[in-house]
Length: 223
Image 1: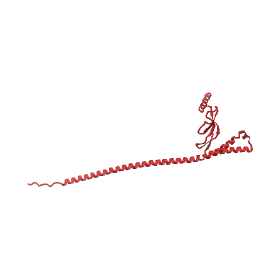
Image 2 (image 1 turned 135 degrees about the horizontal axis):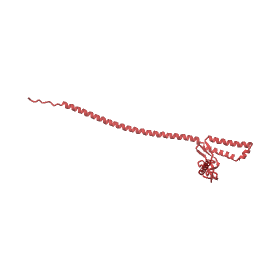
Image 3 (image 1 turned 45 degrees about the horizontal axis):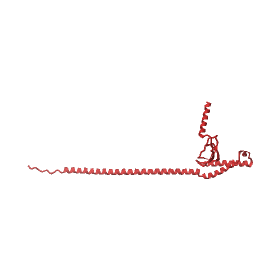
Image 4 (image 1 turned 120 degrees about the vertical axis):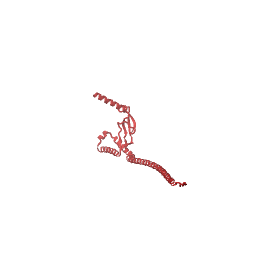
């Protein structure tokens, strides 16, 4: 009995090869998609970083512009206030000359002459005094105040020393005489007061210490 030759079985191998090809194709496609996703994610991250940096830059510019605008607004407000307060400084200095003339005119009349004056002279003196008081009030209404330094410690920011007066009865550096009144407008000196300053007395600190010691001795004696 002769042996019959079998035909080669090729169907199984072809099917297996087809599956493998499909798997390889799917794997390649998946890898391509993964690579594309990575590229998209990378581009997205880069774009996000760029946009965040741009937002931060715009925010910084906005804050700087806002701060500058606020500074400009505050400066403008201050300039308006200063213009209202100090805009009349030149005019006020001229008015002070009138006040000085009134004060000098009244100063030429002693108290005895004022007390014995009658008739037109008395009316004139009273009119001058009323005018002087009215002028001072008008100046105060516009923020111009008279400096009253007599008896106070000399302040170079408010006073101008014209001479020294030997006077041991008051602390050295005390204003004992006012030659010409001073004025301030707002927080600024319109005109310093011209004054005479005491020399030869105890220092203000030493005088205060002596006064304190005397008070303590009085309290101890009373106890």
